[in-house]
Length: 315
Image (cartoon, rainbow, N blue to C red; front, side):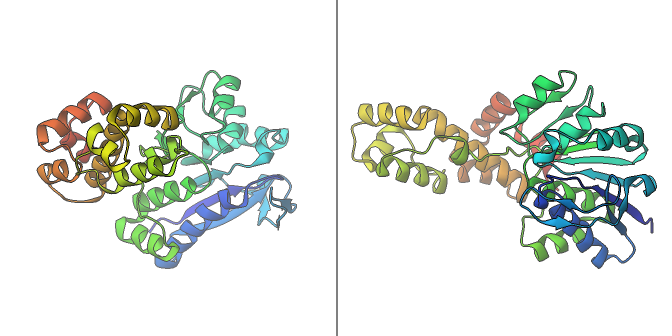
């Protein structure tokens, strides 16, 4: 079996979970399949680094002493805002020798500064993507997905998405069973597909100030197959339909109908990704009623039919 070297770049101001999350995934996989991974951490000169939370970490080696790894991981953190020019220079000269190049969160800034993301589609933390796009116009930044794989380069969004990406890489290397074992041990989902958005509909939307409307948001999320018409929801909120629709838009930032559509689409995507339920069963469970209604929603919002979506994203 191929022994894959994983090298994680450390620097002052690194976010600890950005590198310990993926490290634990690969270490767990190496425990399942002895010899599968050789995991190393390296700083520019081999000296200890201080994370953004104040934790001191001693790396295994100096980057100059590292041989070309199979997988090179650059985590994020405050240190990427004014990245050590020496680290950027090392990345520019050495990173392309890696078979896989990975960034977590704002680690994408370091890769972009080294010219390694030009012409590629990438992602980063939702709060910082605009700065990446403005600073590096040659990079195509998509703030939505939790991770994006563009050829040998993989970029992930904030913090825990680095774990999702690492699990996907382990599954690619060693198979689904090993990735599942690691995910169970870490008590995380095995697979959040890279196309999944950084926020669920509920998190992306505004939270209503009034308790009745917050309760309606929760009810929609928990009962996508129910009657979610404006009149039915208004009755649950003890408001007139007109008053309910106006209050919902004012407090949540979108109309009730559009919000319901987004929730139903999200539930349908999750069922197609994670279950073997038939298209008709998924249609009923999400409140679309018929496969044709589900198909129209998918084509309108995602540009593909449900069956094609499942073919691409179901493991």
